[in-house]
Picture 1 (tube, rainbow, N blue to C red):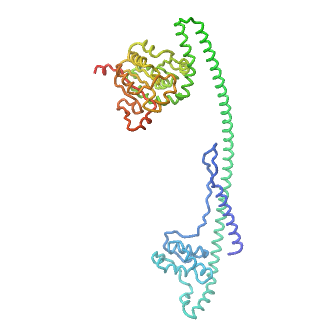
Picture 2: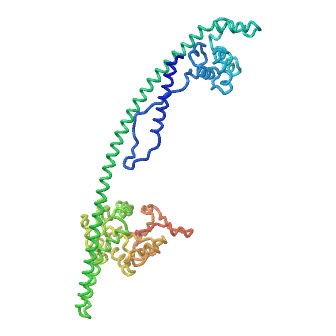
Picture 3: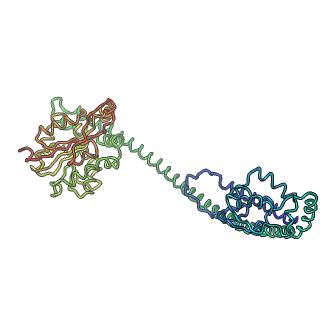
Length: 496
């Protein structure tokens, strides 16, 4: 091989090394940007094939001339793969490579040797044109004559060796041109990839700047809202203090024996706490979306109820912020609500819901008999004294029509965390109500088909209750935090 070709090969090796380093560096994991986690789509850069030239693995016939044009190492690797069907081992490489490089053997002799080996015979590869064109190889083992034949053979083989060298130079030159072409294509792909990466980097930085600006605006808005909220709380506190002073002054001006005047002041004191109770609901009960998500499981019971399908009205007592009324409205079920808390009534009214301020039991007693399809109440019954609880069931029974029903949800004391702790968050709670107690009251006041709804599957009225049969102490901690009692007014049931 000429000196120019050697220089070209060294240049190519240097370029390949540089490309490998650059591609390897680009494949190192980079920290993900929080603002843009999308996968970058870049031009694929194909790696160059550095494997030795070879033949198809399924070939079983070759011509000896096909192996010419390969350098010594490439020839040995190709010969082993073609004749023996495997890679050359270390012992074969150590034996043949020095002999081949020093001219003590030829590629044809190595091919003959490999084909004649047990492995070669078992594989049965056919190689034509293996015999020396001068017919002198058989004389090399003859004493005295063999030495002369060996020297003579070297001279006679010079033209063949020259042609073999020329083919190797031509093959190396072709390989060099192919490598340069592949390098140019790879470099072009790398440039395109770098340009695209740079553009994506600019876009990602732009998005990051936008996100940072939005975050600053959100923080500023939050700070303003917090300041406004703090100011509103201060104002509310001042108003509450002023109202308390006015109430105290009113009491001082009333005669000692004026019971009617004292009773008229009590509702004013209760109303002063309405806004505080709304804040309590927001903090400890949860957002309206959260509560509505929990209540949604009951909707199918109402959609399939005959009195509701006939257009009957659902009355929600203690409607609060209107979560349940909103769900009923979205389901095209006629409903209205009532609540003692004026602040909550105002909040529900602002949503366009049919609500009014007043006492639920008094409202039910004043309602026409058998005028309602259902009476619901979420986290209401636990606020009532026993006498008022019984009165609620009685008033609801009178106001319900045939097959009408009640649904009252309340904290579940079967869950020991609820019964011992979280139930007491609300200072207006009276006492926890075990499920069997509400079942008993409903049945005792004339309701039938009473069931306790602990889990979602209990809302399917055609299926038995899931029930609660604790087997160990931990079962008392696994119970749902809320349950509901469902009870129907059915004259047929009562007659039976």
